[in-house]
Length: 309
Image (cartoon, rainbow, N blue to C red):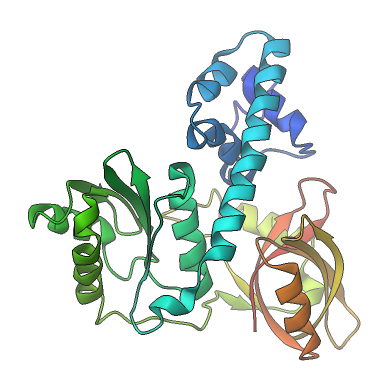
């Protein structure tokens, strides 16, 4: 972080920071959710050399050109994954503890992202597959209720998979097309006893009036956040929610208010704008689960909503 925030930062990283208009000190959030996905976008869309060319460039003009190509790939990747998620009917697997979907037409570069999205929607371990030449390849994501990396190793030992591995929350695997149904049956059997928690967990119940720069500074003492140091999730009860703006029909800027007149702004990402509008129209108050962030564009302290009930 010290190097990235110094004057001697990598020219490719500096180009992405400028391209995405980040106006503040770079944190693990920016690396994980803004800069990192763009670096990965080239590889996901079939041009893995782009990331190398960007990060190894000593010429700022060349770095800008590569970054613009990467940004185009990232936008295309977002469109593809949004379309696939909209096509998927989660009720198809309603009577089991997993999400399991295969379509030979899906783009191989987004199956892991799709699995993660499905997992966050209904909290079930999710496995998404597509065709790659003569084999089926896929990715899995889970909250860790079951070590899915270990399941891939077991399925490989049983001859169900050609190869597979990972860790307790993420996995990758390859199998023959004729084994897809057998693989699904194996996963259903191995996850039949896990508990699916639909109630969102949180670390602390707070009031709207404490969502400010002081809280953000206190949270900095706990950072950096990551796999072994989860970022705190907060909860507000009985809040009023108003939509301020919709972005690309899938992101919403919201105003969250309490009964005492305090309010804050928040972002809700990867949500259908029509579904959100319909949901908010049916009730007047909600429980909100969120993380506290510094908005990378306005420098305000805002919330990033994880869920609304």
